[in-house]
Amino acid sequence: MKEKLSIIKIGGNIIENETELNKFLALFAAMDAPKILVHGGGKKANQILLKMGIEPQMAKGRRITDGASLEVAVMVFAGLVNKTLVAKLQALKCNAMGMSGADGNAITAQKRPIGDIDYGFAGDVISIKTNTISDIINIGLSPVFCALTHDDNGQLLNTNADTIASELAIGLSSQFETSLYYCFEMPGVLEDISDQKTLITTIDRTHYAQLVERGVISNGMLPKLHNCFEALKKGVKQVHIGNLALFEKENDNYTTLTL
Image (cartoon, rainbow, N blue to C red; front, top):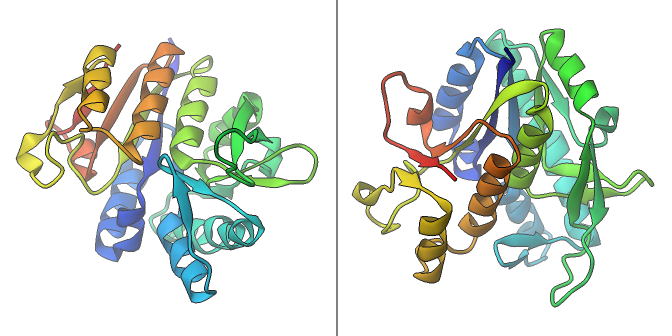
């Protein structure tokens, strides 16, 4: 029987809210089973870009990363945000290890080909070094991955954190029973974004297509849910989307994705 592994991607609004962040990290640290934390840092990166007089660019829910944006992303994601999270987890007696895809050659990616949109230094994941990551987990460390990968030729690439989380869950499902969690400020996927009482508790692929067609799911939620269904199709045990209530016992106030 495979050991259970939780891969949790934390959203930017929680990272930016110190009270919510501290609550989440306490819940994460208290989890007994092996776990991996994945984060971005886009809001902080946008703040710094704007201070530099650079307007952040997005397309179809994904960041366009030019040279200046990549430099800021590396500083913010792998530096400020990652090391802050790791330090806070150490204070909670959770022995965490900050990582990018380049560390331990953990996640290799390729620069996204130019199509109708040039995403710049954006990376699409090619491979996960599962043995390296499982070795880190098996010695009692909790990896904390930022949203950066590399191309094996010295180039760092900005890679969607939702995608990294799902690819880690898929890759490690051969060695662990993996569960994937997307934790952000909302209770889950909502029919009406302005009304939290419209939570959709279960979504399958057919329902997902209908929600996309109706415009209920759009922008940043599109790649998130696409990654969720790819993960389920490729061996991930379960996928849940919600807020901190995801980790509270006897609570089902979140969205579960099913095939």
